[in-house]
Amino acid sequence: MSANPVLEMDSGEKRLNELGYKQELRREMTLFKTMAITFSCISAFSGTPLYGQSLRYAGPATLVWGWVVVSFFTWFVAIAMAEICSSFPTTGSLYFWAAHLAGPRWGPFASWCCAWLETIGVIFAIGAQTYSGSQALQMIILLATGTNKGGGYFASKGVFLCLYMALILIWAVLNTFKLQVIAFLNIISIWWQVVGGLLVIVMLPLVAQSTQPASYVFTHFETSPESTGVSSIPYAVILSVLLSIYSLFGYDAAAHLTEETKGADRTGPKAILSSLGIISVFGWAYYLSLTFSIRDLEYLYNADNETAGALVPAQIIYDAFYGRFQNSTGAVVFLCIIWGSYFFCGLSTTTTAARVVYALSRDNGIPFSPIWRKLHPRTKVPTNAVWLCAAIGLLLGLPILKLDVVFTAFISVSTIGWVGSYAVPIFARLVMAEENFKPGPFYLGRASRPVCLVAFLWICYACSAFLLPTFYPLGWKTFNYAPVAVSVVLTVVMLWWALDARNWFKGPVRNIDVRNENY
Image (cartoon, rainbow, N blue to C red; front, top):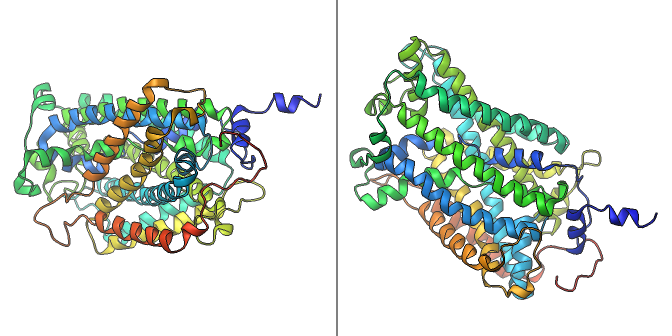
């Protein structure tokens, strides 16, 4: 009878013990619940605020086919990460992977770089989702109260900031409950996005009285140097596909939940790949639906139109419903569906950010780590880490009062940090000796190196693209502040490493006395 607990030990927990960690979080998540949270982190609607500008840069064909190209290369990244996740099912995920794959000599430094890139990325991602949600609410209020032409209320920057702060506080409060509560909300999320997404995708072109021909959607290429300041065609194409790159990451959320997921060495990879597969299809269908439903391209950007030219997809949706029914009710309903996806996405992103901070503090990688790694005694949730992420997210929103390029900074820094952190373990996996890798159930075999090579090169390109200026001529209101923000943070982090952290930070700290000959 004494052998039963060993025989019945969850495969993910067994692997966790082999890696030197004891089970502390509650392991009660199923594949569907993990996939629901992961799916929410890469919402099909997340690129909505970028749609108008992407369309401006290089026309509909570049936007539509850019999604397909980006999806193709993103699959290499996801497959490479799924293999690593199967071998290392830990909450620390990316930086834990980096530490073990890079070996004893380079492991601490690789882990340090990866951890801080990811921390920066996920926290800025909270800001990006909050901004998107606040903008959607701004449009809902405007259309529900009479439109920009009919005396509707357009929220000022101060009110916009209040909406921003309210969303973050709501997400933080919800994340202090048991993870099962978040999992339940994200089950609602996955159905919300699937059913709501299908409704928007199918109904919008049907409601629109006039639609664009397929030749326009799939073959029309057009730059707009007079409005973007970008006259170079290759440059315009690069900027146009930023929407797709931004919309197609976050699938590593499944890896952050592996210590709370049953059979995580199998469930984690399945959740990563399933979520990306669904989003790849749904996202493309959504942007096709929007593009087919365009009535008057130039009018979408007019500051005197019904949505004040603030959100192009909102105007497309309004034009479709008003043209058919002479009211904005349907547009408000569709925007509520989109806002709901932002709400669930932000909720899941907050969950992910808290797990990243918890995992790093568990290994003493953050100032005042004992505070942030503390779990609530009843819910076993890293409550302090949740509120730290929320507090930083609130501070990041303050520039909204003065700058119009806050969202550009949010998406750029979040993408560079979050996607950039993927590169560290993937590169380590690429260059390590194969005999030193202990594969999990999901193993690529001889295909691993070419997959990792393509994935690494794609990540380098994607991060570089988000450092580029997005408008010309350059000025305080058009400057891309991401290079400045990333440079400052990384300089501080690297100096901290060189002057102090390299003496005490050794990467993931074992908290269970288990010997393993490979690790």
